[in-house]
Image 1 (tube, helix red, strand yellow):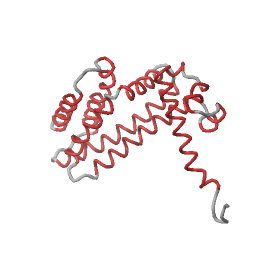
Image 2 (spheres, one colour; image 1 turned 120 degrees about the vertical axis):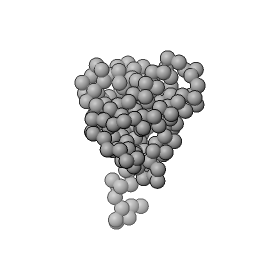
Image 3 (cartoon, helix red, strand yellow; image 1 turned 90 degrees about the horizontal axis):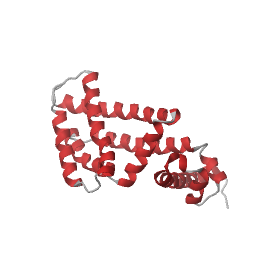
Image 4 (cartoon, helix red, strand yellow; image 1 turned 45 degrees about the vertical axis):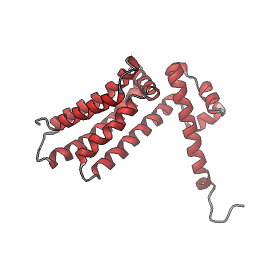
Length: 207
């Protein structure tokens, strides 16, 4: 029985969040298996175990689903950068956590989904906008983190110099998506160690 001060909206919020996540997981599976264009709302609904109408209740279209997937990835990165900047030694924390990032990028399941989204961005202006807006936020947060590390070492860099370091760092990690598809047998632990060394060297480069 509902109490006088309880709210159906509040009560249903966790359920709605769970349903949204269920849809996103089903869509991610379908995008990986069939590609963005090959994955229909009907397929997503079947995989999610709910009606197409239920899908549309939460997401207007497939682009909206991609936007939510990209937003989740962005939220994870923002959480990471916040945790890094809260560390006693930001540089050491960044290098240590880089191993986790390498493992994530080399996961073939994650790689397949991310590459499919990027491929769709090359064809679809709306998806391109979603991806690029998220990238702007990622680069901004990484720039703040790198600047903090460089300032702690007594270095003052121009925004352009920090931006270049961010691009190199992003290229290191995004390139891993292709490598795990092209060379699935690569030694992930060794690659992670080499990436950590590369990051350490990058942070010592002149501005």
